Amino acid sequence: MAGLIAKHHTDEDAAREYLEKQLWPDGPACPKCGLVGEAYKLEGETTRKGLYKCAGCREPFTVTMGTIFEDSHIPLHKWLFAIYLMCSSKKGISAHQLWRNLWGTDESGKQLGSYKTAWFMAHRIRWALGQEPVAGRLAGIVEVDETYIGGKERSGVANSKYSKKQAVVALLQRQGEVRAFPVDRITLNNIEPVLKAHIEPEGQLMTDESSVYGRPQDYFATHDRVNHKQKQYSRRVNGLTITTNSVEGFFSLIKRGNYGTFHHWGRPYTQQYLNEFTFRYGTRKMSDHERNAAAIQKTSGKRLTLKEPKRA
Image (tube, rainbow, N blue to C red):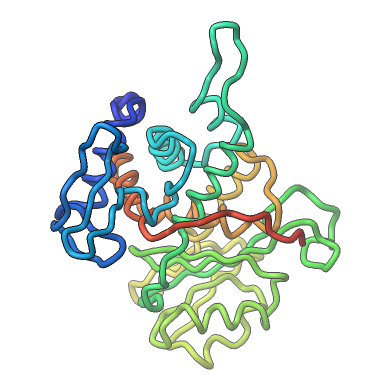
């Protein structure tokens, strides 16, 4: 609970100082010219708090410039509290719950703040968590699986053009990161390009018996399967464990979040939610405080005005 009552979650000056420590470990970094540690603080009576001036390019700046917090009318301490709540909630936190936690009620019991504001904040944070260049391809043992995200449907509809569910494919490198992507339908032609783009040719691919993995032996070193239809979930071959249990465990977190926390998310926003879950899974061995710090680092260079995407 200590993190939930941290001073930078309730006080604006403390929030700004905390953000400066996280984003500027070597001193103020000018977002205009990139000069580090060569800026001085402006502290005039009419000067807004946290304003610096670069000794190189002579331009003024603050720590929020170039981040998802820039020009936001939402207090910085509420942004930091929202990030902490999203990072410490294993299955996510809904926009309604975020709204209640950030603003609460007044003395008369009237709810303060806005649900739309909380929703907007959550999607800005998800966008920041996923907007990084892909650092090469996955190597070693890579488990791959596919699933459908959404409510129940009648038999035979799930992988058709009439399905309301979202098809998702995930690639998990053992002892490493996980990547997940929405696809139109789960077919060989849709999944094969994803495998080629994100797994090294020397990779050891592990999947279930699905026919959508029909040709991996043509472009990967090895391809091992487990046959779920025959109740086979793990087997040992020459000391190597062949299984897809890890990537299926990742999918179980997403589905529990979808069913139990969010209840539903629109198809255009699937990648946003996948960003959130892949980030938490990739930092699962960190403490909540370490994960929170890692998330804040990813907000830098992410100036964004979120627009409503076109409906699918």
